[in-house]
Length: 29
Image 1 (cartoon, rainbow, N blue to C red):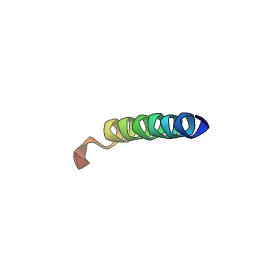
Image 2: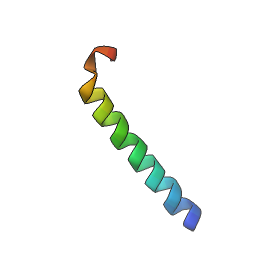
Image 3: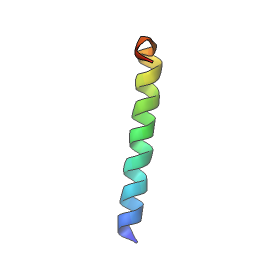
Image 4: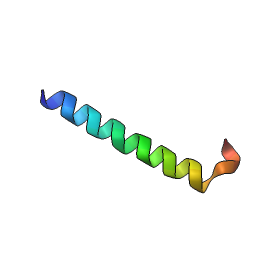
């Protein structure tokens, strides 16, 4: 299940980046 591991890693990274972006630029939300 290497595909599932890669997919979950990408999803976790994307959500972390989105969270930081929302904290840095709160005027867009």
